[in-house]
Length: 378
Image 1 (cartoon, rainbow, N blue to C red):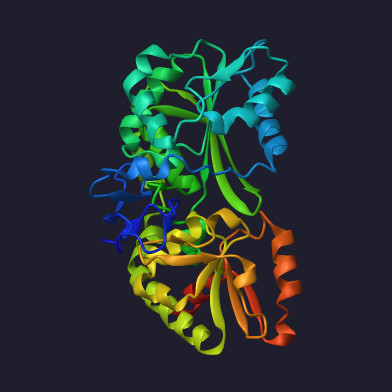
Image 2: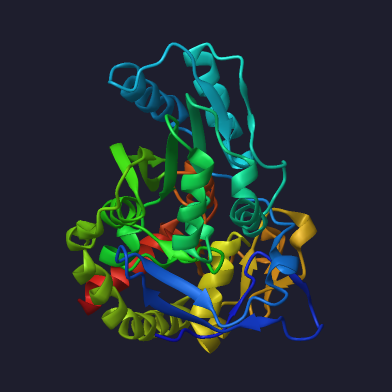
């Protein structure tokens, strides 16, 4: 399925400049696992636009996650007296430090240089896997990299080489079940090329020759995560494909055009009653604006507290970014907030205090708005 053209949504542009570069994307389904793939026809120039952006991973459950890893390993047949702890990229450093403290290990570090964009990291793994093999007893942490891989199956083949024998890997990715079951478009991002559920993550790992020691699901800062602890296996389980949830992905794809149409109608209705704004000039807002196409013109501006973003634009339709001072609070305002409420609850409290419903305003999360529309079309 082809999507509307998407920009590099993390890249902001100056107003009154040329139209931002767009990329043609399509949805397909991975044949090994049933995971949803979002791939561009060409990625020429994509990395240059997005590599300077910094995105923080949800981390308020690091203690729980590190306990899960430690308890799994030291209480099982895989227990060892000594572990060498390695992260793949700088996304992994905080969890690596938690594991170091709990396992009393002095051997920690990253297998790749610091500051890499996921596109650069996956290239280095795929091109240098024979040179960065983990020693036995290593715990390798890979957080939020797998969903960025442009060639998932080749990446996992190379990961097997890196992991070697008698080592373990903790893999963590966003759980996209909310996207598939609730139409939560805030989970879509053109930098995420693979959308997993717990079952599709297990299926692709098993089919590529990994043994899943255990798996788990977490909610961190309001975001759902799925994870697995794996090691290399002697054989590939090609029957894993039977265990996936194709139906929910196919249902999402079949309803996607209707969902976008319903969102457009809802936004038009909102704009007739209130001045419509997005809050948060981030990649969630940018991707959403691109997906809804020219309907984005109903949104007066994207509001952001960062004054450095003021008067820049976001998305293909060049939606202007303003600070809160630009808003006339005497007119009814409808905010769709692109920041997860679990990640920033105080923000929602502040907005609802400044823009109370009894004065005709409305504040809701963009995720909640998408899910409400999804429920209406099912």
